[in-house]
Length: 269
Image (cartoon, rainbow, N blue to C red):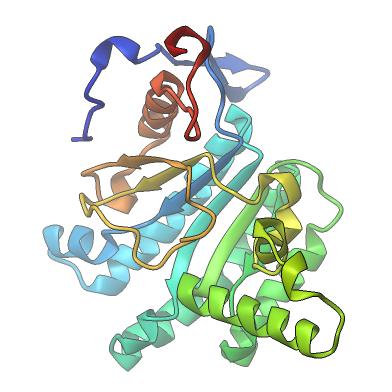
């Protein structure tokens, strides 16, 4: 069961339609979220509920990434950022970490043909140099294989942590100041944004909508700078159960929100 917005009257109706075999999101009005970020949470609890080991949940979660990637692409999402592995996840048991490091290999080895068919471009951000060699190699290969695609960007946050990202950005800015490449007074919000790992996304660097599954109500060190004005949507569904239909529901909730960015809408002035 998902958490619903306080003002139900503002929820716009969304429906999926079939067109040439594809699913498309159609809306009568409302701003569409071009960049959606998802904290994919609850794989382990999903497995426990099914009386299976945690690895079973992670495999089901990977399968759902494939489903939701295609759904988001066909709905018209331009960037889908998925929190796949955090810098804190290394604290988990070694066997589980090893399994999680194998998942990108299995994912890209099986899913690249479908990504190509969907015209999806893969991007992976994070401290990739710290990944095992095989995992790192397959991520770079996936980016190379899909580099010429110009559809939705599937952006994985892999070995990513926002505080570490911001720290690295500040260190780089400091080096540029020390080398007299940048004046301290010239540093502004744009400067910081340009030194973050999302800078390659350009105007779409900041998510419009953040979704977190499994009922948890926290950001878990994810895109702390970029989420400053994002709309938040929390679902009770564990990630393997989070469906394309609920993604459409989340978008409908987003479209019913009054996004003022600190100002006032015309009718409230």
